[in-house]
Image 1 (cartoon, rainbow, N blue to C red):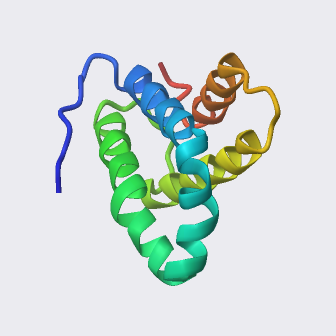
Image 2 (tube, rainbow, N blue to C red; image 1 turned 120 degrees about the horizontal axis):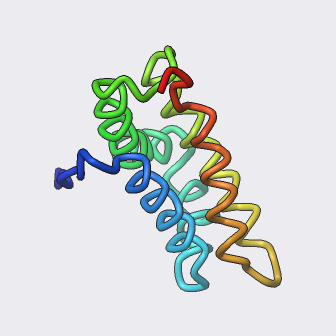
Length: 123
């Protein structure tokens, strides 16, 4: 599996960009039906979740491991955090894909608010 190189100086910024990019790509007209409707129905929920865990959750775990090592993360198990965020991103994707007008700033601000809750308040 391809692994990206994390910029250790701005992991939060990169995480926000990656989460925003995920939603931006998933809600494109050419992608949203396949990603959000057909794939889970055709391959089945269990297989779809396995693929999601091997991809989205895996990338989130990479980010959050770096943040944990930098002491920038709340004291929660990384696998719990990543599944909460992955679920939220999937729901946000479904929500934004059904809107008539897509406001990129609203997507970005939603992601920032979601992720800010996992930042350590000790800094």
